[in-house]
Amino acid sequence: MESSPPTITVQVKFAGRTIPVELPTSASTAELKLLLQPLTNVLPRGQKLICKGKVLADAASLSSMQVGDRSKVMLIASQGLHQGEGPITKNSSGLAASAKRTSNVKDNQTLKPEIISKSRAERWKITGVIALSGSSLKAVPEEVWDCGSSIRVLDVCNNSIEAIPQKIAALKSLNKLLLTANDISDGGISWEGLSCVDTLTVLSLSQNRLVTLPPSLGTLTFLRELRIANNMLGSLPVEIGLLKQLEILIANNNRITSLPSSIGDCESLFEVDLSSNLLAELPKACGNLHNLKMEGWEEFDERRRQKYQKQLDFRVGSSGVFDEGADDDNRHA
Image 1 (cartoon, one colour):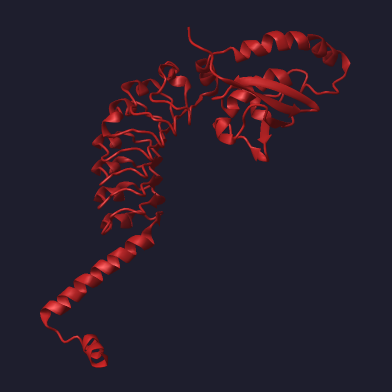
Image 2: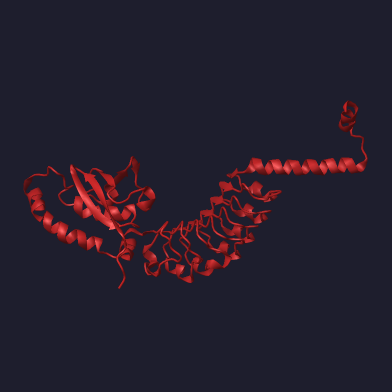
């Protein structure tokens, strides 16, 4: 029998009340909002949750926002975004409020446990977000693939995951795949499976063990953001030019020595970071990228000028041309 995941109890302050909410340590802000809906009558989209002066982002896990056991969270409800008789407050009056108070015990005993007892897979399907960052995972849980087209965001950053299998193709509505800081190497990703996800717009593979990227990268034609920093990449595939909608390319801290001329076909690019690589020159096709803002250009340009100066010095020295500067140095020695 599967053991229950560890839980935390968050103290939610709302309308003069303190509402204790128990949920898994891996839960996201969106999941907390769903649990609060029947307890406050405030729809999730009308809830703003604040902890330690920071607004909690829906897709973020509570742990990543430093929300732990007994943490105090403030709920601010947007006017008009409630259900039924409106928000349940401490000072509610009238028959409706009386009826709610009468049924509070029943609600707390039946409705709340019913929601919390849902499996995490069911919660993922409801929210569309799987937030498993920093969960000490060595592999993506099998129940992730069973969520199918319900999932829009898969965040498994900061784990020890080595492989993304063919089953990734099951997440047909996936928009963001966040794999930063894992142990993924070249053969660890099923690019064939990934190419079946034609809704993918953000792919983050930074801080892994990648040495090369395959030609099949070019099949991800809806990709808008590609993050591959802090790997061991020596080059980018020619097929990167097929990513016509790519806007952001973050590839700093690799071993890239040259760029394919096809990079000039990525007509939507406006932000590129190639700092801390081994680039000696950029292809002329980069001139086609009129909206481009490139990080690390100063560093690259300095290396280019130093290389040119060395070539110039060598040609002058080997041709026997009189070096007036050198002669002056000798006279003053």
